[in-house]
Length: 223
Image (cartoon, rainbow, N blue to C red; front, side):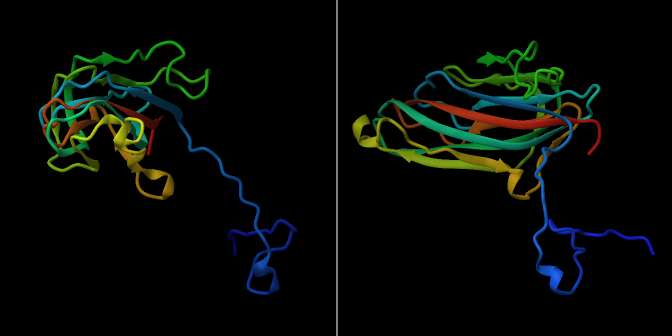
């Protein structure tokens, strides 16, 4: 009867006897597909930016590769530029976008050609059609349908103390919106799908900041 046989590092067949406690050799290998990574930060975000303002946009359009497998999206931290005149919450949400037929605009649109974003020189350019990050204000939405609920969020707050009281001007530590490396499901994007990161609240008056993001993804023909 055919089957699968497990063999230990010492050459013993792993079964139910004493050899069951023998160590196995396991090699970690990267997942298939073409691998990409993006990391950047905004400009100085204007005071009291409105709630639901988009500060990062990621839009995938399929071609030779059918899916973008988003494995990790991280907030890399927030740097305080000007102190708020009133205390208040500050946060960001990651929301999936469907039927994204017209790309957004504004801010800085990231170049996708040349040796850019791929994790190996031999890999082709990413099929991410548009990747934008805010400079001083909200990005223009384009044409898309956002899910009603977020898939990740980071929430914090600010007060009116001097900048030195915030620990060298930092507010939010590095933390993920989503992370599939611990066995959770990645975000699987098909043609004209993507995600955005938007603000959760209107920033307190006079408060300005810069915030960074990192996105890790693969592009594959099937999933």
